[in-house]
Image (cartoon, rainbow, N blue to C red; front, side, top):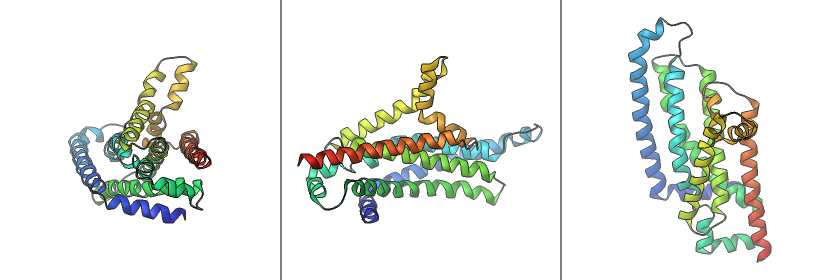
Length: 250
């Protein structure tokens, strides 16, 4: 049932012009950034050759492209998640779901996986562009895999937060703005963690960005992975509990 809901959600995304517009615009912007990074790398390559332990194409092309993709996806994800449950509530179909024999866990996970499938398609587009560098050079496979892992975890966190906020309102615009505000706050909160003190360390730990940066550098730390997993589980649990509470009220 979870897979059925997920595939139905994915199909509904592709039936909307928004999904195709996002695919095209994101690819166009990142392709432009990709070519700029490649051109910059080719320009400074002679100087890099004279440096010991100089950064390679993975550091100067792959990591910046994935970092820029993360910023763009922070803007895009609220647009994709805003309709997951808020549209169901506004149209009245959520009442049918709540009264159906399907569990709230299945509904939440199905909706979540549906949008995650779409986000993984977006990431696959980006990955194919990066892997094309193998045609002319050699990439650090470890750093590439670590960077893609960081992107997957970040997108999964975006989607989980968006799903929960979508469950709180029947207005998709409110859900989108709320999701963007929350994600942006968790993105820039690392600036507060740059000062010394226990409180700043807490802000630094809560930052989505501070946990992705090491992965983009090829450093896979279990603490970063656990942070994202806890983030995802927390928001999925909140979504399920909220749907359960609504079912009990009916």
